Image (cartoon, rainbow, N blue to C red):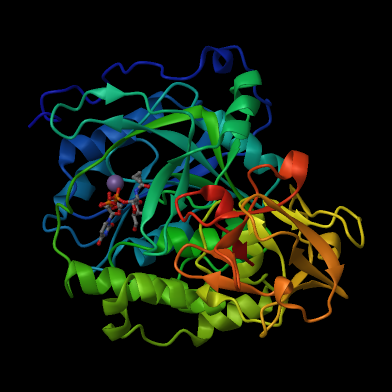
Length: 462
Ligand code: LR7
Ligand code: MN
């Protein structure tokens, strides 16, 4: 009702940072096919999506708008819209879900760049140019606008924060997360700079069409809704591409509290099945952390994934561990996954335990992780030593605040440490002292009284 009472070409506030307004874009941008899949979308909302694309994009950049009607109850919803200039409508003869519907739209597209939108969006001023420019520059980028909020009750258009990126926890549910302090500072200097994101929200993005094909489109055995954005995100990063949010592009989206459509198979089952498919193909040993977080998922069959594994092999994609180290080092990884005896880094977010090239009798420090082993390579052995070549970490005193020194491994008890779970603390085998990075900048890593509430005592072995 709220939507029906508003004109399809209504004004909305320009929510961009003022620095975006003076920004110019390349003249020779490629044109795009806009693909919108829908199932039982409100007509006025769907119409407004289409109208906003046509009204707020330069005419020559929109090759066509492909609407994929995913077997909505009333075929006229789409057919009516086919009368509009540039609009083509494809209709599924059974319910397929958004993944297969989008692939159908993509396969039919004639432009060399694809733009996906949900069926309840409103494109804002100059939304398209900055997206196309990033993809034209480098075809392995998948780029998203900042997604503004269209209130689901009033349809009021509200600007979203420009300091968010896409993220997830081990339940593999998408969430927004504030970018960290350093990144905020970088963006304060230039608010038009893109934000790299570990995950994309999934509905609104631009991608080069040949790249979409090369990367394996979508998993065609995923159904209805959910987890395809995670799968595409892992795949993109692990197989050499990147995901970014372009802050000078703004598109509104109606965020809803529940699915306004049926879910053949039950929403829980379908979501778990899709998520399992993503986890089984891309997460390697880390999939166990998902099953620990969502034990019930294990009971949901996920079908055959051999084609997707084949794709991963063909594209020579990197392991998930690489993704965790380079793309999303902020994600807390419980150390359960780690196998004793294997060389790893010992880290806190982007910072790693580092010998700093010092040798015997020196302290150990923290340094930006470089993921190349070297001074940041440690082996936590079966018997509890933290080794770097012949050197072992040894506590100097038995008091809190004791220095931790690099000593020749000689098997003495002051060199023995225990991993405490949950929490990721590294506790001395005999004393209630834990490795702590609090004063690492001045005194190196110390052994402090154990306190699981301290971030400086939580370590990841990765
Ligand atoms: O069976 C279906 N067939 C469809 O064609 C089910 C849905 N759809 C269509 C639907 O009409 C809509 O246009 O697919 C589109 C997405 O469905 P929504 O709007 O119900 O999804 P959402 O906005 O709640 O969810 C987000 O996560 C989804 C995971 O599968 C998709 O990636 C959505 O595109 C995505 N939306 C966004 O990224 C917008 C920002 C929301 C956030 C966060
Ligand atoms: Mn949506």
